[in-house]
Image 1 (tube, one colour):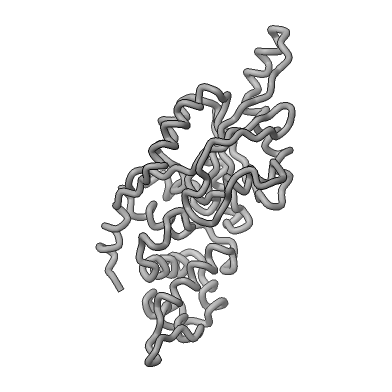
Image 2 (cartoon, one colour):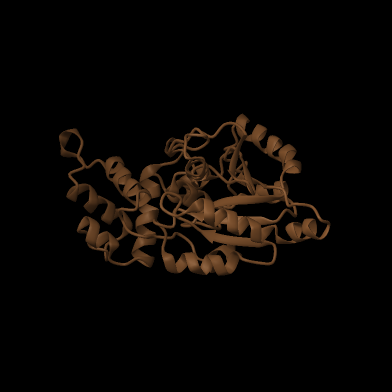
Length: 296
């Protein structure tokens, strides 16, 4: 297994494909067409799934932050993040895109964000037109799933791989709200090793780019420290052992072996990562508002 220094250097790679550069430019151009921005973030990592480049693009537009995948996130942490991120110009809404009435929730929250504009139009005797909102976010935070759910059809090409949403797409939600979907954009490189690691853990960076053994080991260490008992219950391991030993125990218990009866750490790592991502390990968040404030 590679050591953490090698893995850290891999996290500082330039990860900015050409279509991502184009997407940023297109978003800047289309920003003039919208009244507000809806930013999707993964509720498990609300700080790390924020794209610093979006701050430049969004400028001073009113913003609605959607914390997605709340069915996989720690509800206590999610509440803390809602309190932390909410302010005069930013509404925060935690949603389960697949189960909640997202049309109703997002329409109401968008109207609240644009309250000043709507009241201004009414004072001038103008019938308020539909609110136009741009939907932004990094890859794999549920943007396409959200748009498809709202449109009740496959309006956007969605896949569980980063960077699949390719083009700009308008979707009419209601008479009072229209959404402009945009491709997921990551930033040029990750200065913060922990941010890059968290993004990799939720699947916003392609697994081929990083060492999966290291990712699984770091996740195991985090679970040991913050969610005691989860590893023991799921994999029948001794959480008092160090993180490498625990991965070895998981490989043994899940019969992850190669030819010659040698343990297959890569297979065991994939099991841990997949079961975290699909929620089989329980509701887990990978950062707190305090950690985000320190890293900001």
